[in-house]
Image (cartoon, rainbow, N blue to C red; front, side, top):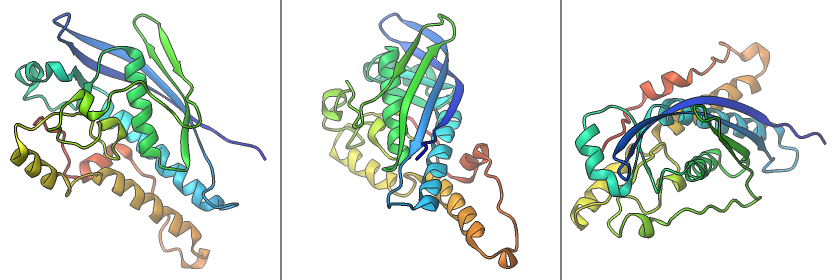
Length: 242
């Protein structure tokens, strides 16, 4: 049986605030990946196609509408970042360090979580368009990363129980609360909006497949193409610095 892979390439820009060098750098990258899906149930082609469509749209939405033009910083530089960019509307990315290999691992991990259990990112490449240096990540069947746990990286008062690259949502930052009360309030407020954009994509794809499965004489309107750039506008979510 033939196997099919989806491939996509994006150009993204990151604003990197490096506390070590005291320098704000703008990085232009080319990010590419390939994706494939396996059926959850044998010969369940429709469900496999549905899952891959959802994964493909979530991954591209995350790259284009969240990752691109983000401001990247390390946990140690969080206070300085808030001072310099606290009023910016850009998305914020908290990184363990600024190595391209680390950036490649956190992105691959996040996209793998967004893909779900039956769709896989089997190759990912990151190329610096200024230096022309690139890196390829070809993960094992069960990917492993050289990335810190939440306790090693932030602290016991981390707003999230796991790092952002392991969370099923579109957030890309981690920070810590001042005390137990602030932590409890943050997590309670988080529950209402967590994963809102991803739920919109799931609903849109399910709707299209439901229309396609109806008898032709019962289809009232054709399915609509989904504009990923509009998905974010439908939700109430905005990246916030806490």
